[in-house]
Image 1: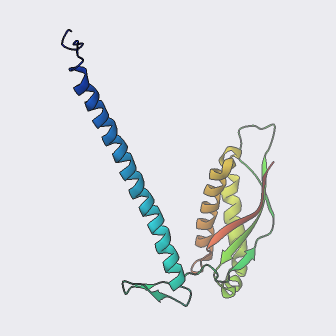
Image 2 (image 1 turned 180 degrees about the vertical axis):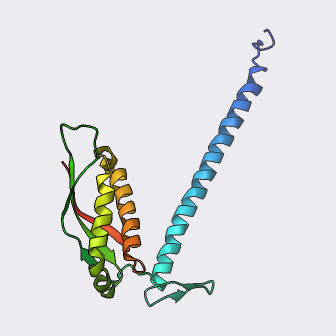
Image 3 (image 1 turned 90 degrees about the vertical axis):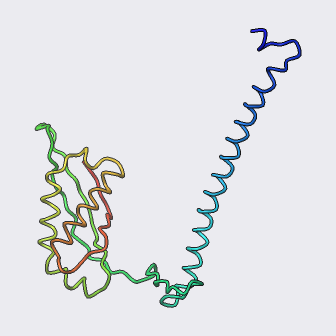
Length: 177
């Protein structure tokens, strides 16, 4: 014990230097990691901006000689409107029946697909209603529930209209009562 607390405090200095070295190394690691992360994030955003600038004319050649695909952000989309649907939901309470009322549009790539899908609308509506009747109100709570419903309806519509393909299911209105 006398060695730890010597009169001149010589034994206490190496211990504090070790702490300083450890703290300094940890701080350097955090700074280096933060700098590397910022470089990757900012460098990627610059690369994406460069690809977008080169991609406006149907694809551009980057500095590495690779052709960048054209971005279809501004490509015109067509929509197929479905009639408003009101479907009773599955529930454990016999006293109070709950319903979902929704208006949906399907996004497709071209107007030709709209004409191909319209004759198949009874199949699409049937597929939607049979799925919705098995859902509980708790399945539709929150954004994650609505997202899962949207993904499942997209899968079902693509099965119903095959070989045509819908790009997205868009909810215009959805209310659980």
